[in-house]
Length: 265
Ligand code: IPD
Image 1 (cartoon, helix red, strand yellow):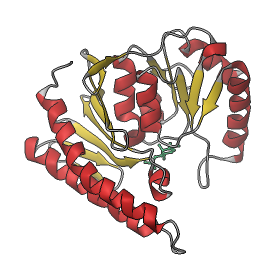
Image 2 (cartoon, rainbow, N blue to C red):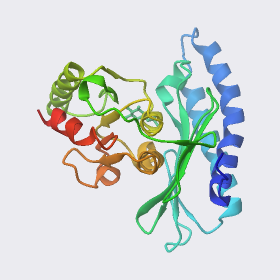
Image 3 (tube, protein in one colour):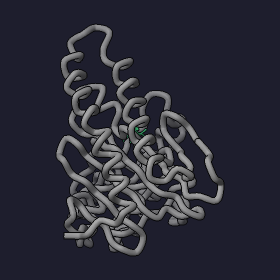
Image 4 (tube, rainbow, N blue to C red):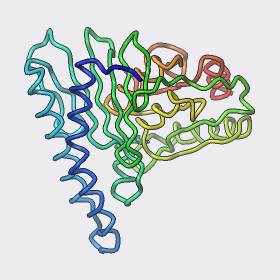
Protein backbone atom coordinates (compact mmCIF):
# COMPACT_ATOMS: atom_id res chain seq x y z
CA UNK A 1 0.00 0.00 0.00
CA UNK A 2 1.32 3.44 -0.86
CA UNK A 3 1.50 6.20 1.70
CA UNK A 4 -0.27 9.17 0.14
CA UNK A 5 1.59 12.49 0.22
CA UNK A 6 0.06 15.52 1.93
CA UNK A 7 -0.77 16.97 -1.50
CA UNK A 8 -2.58 13.82 -2.68
CA UNK A 9 -4.47 13.72 0.62
CA UNK A 10 -5.70 17.27 0.06
CA UNK A 11 -6.86 16.37 -3.47
CA UNK A 12 -8.48 13.18 -2.24
CA UNK A 13 -10.40 14.92 0.57
CA UNK A 14 -11.72 17.54 -1.85
CA UNK A 15 -12.90 14.85 -4.31
CA UNK A 16 -14.33 12.73 -1.52
CA UNK A 17 -16.33 15.63 -0.08
CA UNK A 18 -17.71 16.64 -3.50
CA UNK A 19 -18.59 13.04 -4.37
CA UNK A 20 -21.02 12.67 -1.46
CA UNK A 21 -23.50 15.23 -2.75
CA UNK A 22 -22.69 14.15 -6.33
CA UNK A 23 -23.89 10.62 -5.63
CA UNK A 24 -27.09 11.93 -4.01
CA UNK A 25 -27.63 14.12 -7.08
CA UNK A 26 -26.94 11.14 -9.33
CA UNK A 27 -29.69 9.20 -7.57
CA UNK A 28 -32.04 12.11 -8.28
CA UNK A 29 -30.98 12.19 -11.95
CA UNK A 30 -31.86 8.51 -12.31
CA UNK A 31 -35.40 9.40 -11.16
CA UNK A 32 -35.58 12.34 -13.58
CA UNK A 33 -35.03 10.16 -16.69
CA UNK A 34 -38.75 9.66 -17.17
CA UNK A 35 -39.61 13.36 -16.97
CA UNK A 36 -40.12 15.09 -20.28
CA UNK A 37 -38.02 18.11 -19.33
CA UNK A 38 -35.10 15.83 -18.53
CA UNK A 39 -32.34 16.46 -16.06
CA UNK A 40 -30.10 18.96 -17.91
CA UNK A 41 -30.59 21.96 -15.61
CA UNK A 42 -30.33 19.82 -12.52
CA UNK A 43 -27.09 18.25 -13.78
CA UNK A 44 -25.48 21.58 -14.58
CA UNK A 45 -26.30 22.67 -10.99
CA UNK A 46 -24.73 19.42 -9.70
CA UNK A 47 -21.61 20.12 -11.79
CA UNK A 48 -21.34 23.69 -10.46
CA UNK A 49 -21.93 22.60 -6.84
CA UNK A 50 -19.25 19.87 -7.07
CA UNK A 51 -16.74 22.30 -8.50
CA UNK A 52 -17.48 24.86 -5.76
CA UNK A 53 -16.90 22.23 -3.05
CA UNK A 54 -13.62 21.09 -4.63
CA UNK A 55 -12.39 24.65 -5.01
CA UNK A 56 -13.30 25.57 -1.44
CA UNK A 57 -11.48 22.52 -0.03
CA UNK A 58 -8.35 23.06 -2.14
CA UNK A 59 -8.28 26.77 -1.36
CA UNK A 60 -8.32 26.05 2.39
CA UNK A 61 -5.01 24.23 2.18
CA UNK A 62 -3.27 26.18 -0.64
CA UNK A 63 -4.78 29.71 -0.57
CA UNK A 64 -2.35 31.22 -3.10
CA UNK A 65 -2.68 28.58 -5.84
CA UNK A 66 -4.43 29.30 -9.13
CA UNK A 67 -7.39 27.50 -10.73
CA UNK A 68 -8.35 26.31 -14.20
CA UNK A 69 -11.87 24.90 -13.96
CA UNK A 70 -14.36 23.47 -16.42
CA UNK A 71 -17.27 25.45 -15.00
CA UNK A 72 -15.71 28.48 -13.35
CA UNK A 73 -12.91 29.26 -15.83
CA UNK A 74 -9.51 30.52 -14.68
CA UNK A 75 -8.71 32.22 -11.39
CA UNK A 76 -5.28 33.69 -10.82
CA UNK A 77 -4.17 34.27 -7.22
CA UNK A 78 -0.39 34.27 -7.56
CA UNK A 79 1.16 33.80 -10.97
CA UNK A 80 4.27 32.14 -9.51
CA UNK A 81 2.14 29.49 -7.72
CA UNK A 82 0.95 26.16 -9.20
CA UNK A 83 -2.47 25.78 -10.84
CA UNK A 84 -5.21 23.30 -9.94
CA UNK A 85 -6.93 21.91 -13.03
CA UNK A 86 -10.43 20.67 -12.17
CA UNK A 87 -13.14 18.73 -13.95
CA UNK A 88 -15.91 18.21 -11.37
CA UNK A 89 -17.76 15.64 -13.52
CA UNK A 90 -15.93 14.14 -16.47
CA UNK A 91 -18.55 12.10 -18.28
CA UNK A 92 -21.34 14.64 -17.79
CA UNK A 93 -23.45 13.10 -20.56
CA UNK A 94 -23.33 9.73 -18.79
CA UNK A 95 -24.31 11.43 -15.52
CA UNK A 96 -27.21 13.17 -17.27
CA UNK A 97 -28.48 9.86 -18.66
CA UNK A 98 -28.18 7.99 -15.38
CA UNK A 99 -25.19 5.94 -16.60
CA UNK A 100 -22.80 5.15 -13.71
CA UNK A 101 -19.55 6.01 -15.48
CA UNK A 102 -18.11 9.43 -14.63
CA UNK A 103 -15.30 10.83 -12.49
CA UNK A 104 -13.85 13.78 -10.63
CA UNK A 105 -10.48 14.82 -12.04
CA UNK A 106 -7.97 17.13 -10.33
CA UNK A 107 -4.40 17.84 -11.48
CA UNK A 108 -1.54 20.14 -10.54
CA UNK A 109 0.31 22.20 -13.14
CA UNK A 110 3.60 23.57 -11.83
CA UNK A 111 6.10 25.57 -13.93
CA UNK A 112 4.23 24.43 -17.05
CA UNK A 113 4.51 20.73 -16.09
CA UNK A 114 1.78 18.36 -14.92
CA UNK A 115 3.14 17.08 -11.63
CA UNK A 116 0.24 15.33 -9.85
CA UNK A 117 -3.21 14.00 -10.65
CA UNK A 118 -6.12 12.21 -9.03
CA UNK A 119 -9.19 10.70 -10.68
CA UNK A 120 -12.02 9.49 -8.46
CA UNK A 121 -14.72 7.17 -9.81
CA UNK A 122 -17.45 7.42 -7.13
CA UNK A 123 -19.63 4.68 -8.66
CA UNK A 124 -16.91 2.02 -8.31
CA UNK A 125 -15.20 3.75 -5.39
CA UNK A 126 -11.89 3.68 -7.26
CA UNK A 127 -9.39 6.35 -6.38
CA UNK A 128 -6.53 6.75 -8.87
CA UNK A 129 -3.55 8.93 -8.03
CA UNK A 130 -0.06 9.70 -9.31
CA UNK A 131 2.70 12.15 -8.59
CA UNK A 132 5.71 12.85 -10.77
CA UNK A 133 8.50 10.37 -10.03
CA UNK A 134 6.58 8.29 -7.48
CA UNK A 135 4.40 5.97 -9.58
CA UNK A 136 0.68 5.54 -10.08
CA UNK A 137 -1.82 3.87 -7.76
CA UNK A 138 -5.42 2.70 -7.56
CA UNK A 139 -6.88 2.51 -4.05
CA UNK A 140 -3.31 2.50 -2.75
CA UNK A 141 -2.11 -0.39 -4.96
CA UNK A 142 0.61 0.22 -7.53
CA UNK A 143 -0.69 0.31 -11.14
CA UNK A 144 1.17 -0.38 -14.35
CA UNK A 145 0.16 -0.11 -17.96
CA UNK A 146 -0.56 -3.43 -19.67
CA UNK A 147 2.21 -5.68 -20.96
CA UNK A 148 0.49 -6.53 -24.28
CA UNK A 149 2.77 -6.07 -27.26
CA UNK A 150 0.61 -7.00 -30.26
CA UNK A 151 -2.09 -4.82 -31.78
CA UNK A 152 -4.12 -8.00 -32.34
CA UNK A 153 -4.34 -8.62 -28.56
CA UNK A 154 -4.98 -5.01 -27.61
CA UNK A 155 -8.18 -3.29 -26.46
CA UNK A 156 -8.45 0.46 -27.11
CA UNK A 157 -10.70 3.28 -25.97
CA UNK A 158 -11.63 6.38 -27.92
CA UNK A 159 -14.06 9.31 -28.02
CA UNK A 160 -16.52 9.61 -30.92
CA UNK A 161 -17.08 13.18 -32.14
CA UNK A 162 -20.60 14.34 -31.25
CA UNK A 163 -22.93 17.28 -31.90
CA UNK A 164 -20.97 20.53 -31.96
CA UNK A 165 -17.56 18.80 -32.05
CA UNK A 166 -15.16 18.52 -34.97
CA UNK A 167 -15.61 19.33 -38.63
CA UNK A 168 -16.55 17.29 -41.73
CA UNK A 169 -12.87 16.71 -42.29
CA UNK A 170 -12.03 15.54 -38.76
CA UNK A 171 -15.21 13.39 -38.64
CA UNK A 172 -14.15 11.53 -41.81
CA UNK A 173 -10.63 11.20 -40.42
CA UNK A 174 -12.03 9.71 -37.21
CA UNK A 175 -14.15 7.14 -39.09
CA UNK A 176 -11.07 5.97 -41.01
CA UNK A 177 -8.98 5.78 -37.83
CA UNK A 178 -11.71 3.85 -36.04
CA UNK A 179 -11.95 1.34 -38.90
CA UNK A 180 -8.21 0.82 -39.00
CA UNK A 181 -7.80 0.37 -35.24
CA UNK A 182 -10.92 -1.82 -34.92
CA UNK A 183 -9.78 -4.10 -37.72
CA UNK A 184 -6.26 -4.56 -36.37
CA UNK A 185 -7.06 -5.01 -32.65
CA UNK A 186 -9.29 -6.92 -30.22
CA UNK A 187 -11.72 -4.02 -30.14
CA UNK A 188 -12.52 -0.39 -29.43
CA UNK A 189 -14.68 0.99 -26.58
CA UNK A 190 -16.38 4.38 -26.14
CA UNK A 191 -17.51 4.71 -22.53
CA UNK A 192 -17.75 8.54 -22.40
CA UNK A 193 -15.20 9.77 -19.86
CA UNK A 194 -11.76 10.66 -21.19
CA UNK A 195 -10.44 10.93 -17.61
CA UNK A 196 -11.49 7.35 -16.85
CA UNK A 197 -10.25 6.18 -20.28
CA UNK A 198 -6.78 7.43 -19.34
CA UNK A 199 -6.99 6.05 -15.78
CA UNK A 200 -7.91 2.67 -17.26
CA UNK A 201 -4.92 2.79 -19.64
CA UNK A 202 -2.76 3.45 -16.56
CA UNK A 203 -4.42 0.49 -14.79
CA UNK A 204 -3.66 -1.83 -17.75
CA UNK A 205 -7.36 -2.39 -18.54
CA UNK A 206 -7.14 -0.65 -21.90
CA UNK A 207 -3.91 -0.91 -23.89
CA UNK A 208 -4.35 2.53 -25.39
CA UNK A 209 -6.65 5.50 -26.02
CA UNK A 210 -6.99 8.23 -28.60
CA UNK A 211 -9.24 11.28 -28.97
CA UNK A 212 -9.06 14.75 -30.51
CA UNK A 213 -10.36 18.10 -29.29
CA UNK A 214 -10.28 17.41 -25.54
CA UNK A 215 -10.07 20.16 -22.91
CA UNK A 216 -7.19 20.49 -20.41
CA UNK A 217 -9.41 19.44 -17.45
CA UNK A 218 -10.49 16.23 -19.28
CA UNK A 219 -6.91 14.96 -19.61
CA UNK A 220 -4.53 16.69 -17.17
CA UNK A 221 -4.75 14.13 -14.33
CA UNK A 222 -4.96 11.19 -16.75
CA UNK A 223 -1.72 12.18 -18.47
CA UNK A 224 0.15 12.06 -15.13
CA UNK A 225 -1.41 8.67 -14.33
CA UNK A 226 -0.46 7.06 -17.66
CA UNK A 227 3.11 8.38 -17.56
CA UNK A 228 3.66 7.33 -13.94
CA UNK A 229 2.25 3.88 -14.76
CA UNK A 230 4.94 3.50 -17.44
CA UNK A 231 2.91 4.48 -20.51
CA UNK A 232 3.43 7.09 -23.24
CA UNK A 233 1.22 10.07 -24.05
CA UNK A 234 1.65 12.26 -27.13
CA UNK A 235 -0.30 14.10 -29.80
CA UNK A 236 -1.01 12.37 -33.15
CA UNK A 237 2.47 13.30 -34.44
CA UNK A 238 4.27 11.69 -31.46
CA UNK A 239 5.09 15.12 -29.98
CA UNK A 240 4.82 15.97 -26.31
CA UNK A 241 1.91 18.30 -27.10
CA UNK A 242 -1.12 16.27 -26.03
CA UNK A 243 -1.99 18.54 -23.10
CA UNK A 244 -1.52 21.77 -25.09
CA UNK A 245 -3.40 20.58 -28.19
CA UNK A 246 -6.08 18.38 -26.59
CA UNK A 247 -5.28 15.71 -29.19
CA UNK A 248 -4.25 12.62 -27.26
CA UNK A 249 -2.71 9.27 -28.11
CA UNK A 250 -1.85 7.22 -25.01
CA UNK A 251 -0.68 3.61 -24.79
CA UNK A 252 1.72 1.23 -23.14
CA UNK A 253 5.31 1.63 -24.31
CA UNK A 254 5.18 -1.31 -26.77
CA UNK A 255 1.96 -0.22 -28.48
CA UNK A 256 2.32 3.56 -28.60
CA UNK A 257 4.15 3.63 -31.95
CA UNK A 258 2.03 0.83 -33.53
CA UNK A 259 -1.13 2.72 -32.46
CA UNK A 260 0.21 5.99 -33.92
CA UNK A 261 1.05 4.20 -37.18
CA UNK A 262 -2.36 2.53 -37.38
CA UNK A 263 -4.08 5.87 -36.78
CA UNK A 264 -2.02 7.44 -39.57
CA UNK A 265 -2.76 4.56 -41.96
C1 IPD B 1 -16.21 14.77 -22.04
C2 IPD B 1 -15.76 13.33 -21.82
C3 IPD B 1 -15.91 12.52 -23.09
C4 IPD B 1 -15.21 13.14 -24.25
C5 IPD B 1 -15.64 14.58 -24.44
C6 IPD B 1 -15.44 15.39 -23.17
P1 IPD B 1 -17.11 16.24 -19.97
O1 IPD B 1 -15.93 15.55 -20.87
O2 IPD B 1 -14.43 13.28 -21.40
O3 IPD B 1 -15.40 11.21 -22.94
O4 IPD B 1 -15.47 12.41 -25.43
O5 IPD B 1 -14.90 15.12 -25.50
O6 IPD B 1 -15.90 16.69 -23.37
O7 IPD B 1 -17.78 17.27 -20.83
O8 IPD B 1 -18.02 15.16 -19.57
O9 IPD B 1 -16.37 16.86 -18.81
